[in-house]
Image (cartoon, rainbow, N blue to C red; front, side, top):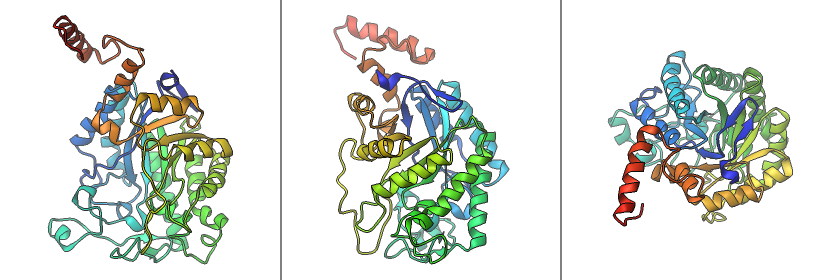
Length: 378
């Protein structure tokens, strides 16, 4: 089964090709992780995944998407992240972290409190508000605050903040670093013509719109140890007419590969435009996988497939068909953190909980035997 074959990127070998995708939990305190995060991420490693991501982590305080986002903008935040990385690796998985700047989406509500612009009620509850920044002064959509365009000096500052955060991530013990260039956040908003209306060298045609994200990728790659893989998450399409398209993603992926990026994690969407909707988006099982397949085929770079990949059979088929190199699962992992171990059982690779953590496997094997003796099924 290809799903359970090891995968190697630079100096890092994953025990299988099952990845727990980064998912915002909005539960940090002033940018610092909490005991919630230790439990949350540890369960996925115990569940058998090969690579476990820590959610998007901010490069600066004003780069947070919400008040609940973790950060690596100061050295004091390293210790908490290091504890998470140690916990993940103690159970056989590798630890990844996604580094991000929220851009014009910065300063919004925690997702489970509305996922929109902060309101007076949010501020009365103690939520801090701040000035969002972006490539241009175009708000995300109707009712959203107007971002402040980044100056040339501001761009240098953001680039250096990405580098510093990635260096701290390495010090914290993360095996894989990913740059978030998707979902309408800062780096993706430079790429998309729906958000970038600059008239300098960082706006206009595709080459100019790619310039700043590529500068960040180049600087980060140069700062990382040569054995540390660098991944990038992209929105392969905006799903909005006149926006970023898959053909742009292929060109961008070629440029990323030339800079030493090791894998492109292919998500989609995330931008908003007043009066426009994601009219071209139809969700369904593996609905984003064709974009990973096209980027892999045409850009010649490893890809990760994501998006409603719920069953082991579907995950295996995507790998067997050559559509992707890694399979990213998000909400499915929240529903079943032990998805990887259940997938191994589904394929008959294990049978009596022998590959589970021994503290669990001993009890479960006895329980399974008792169930079978009683004529019950697991």
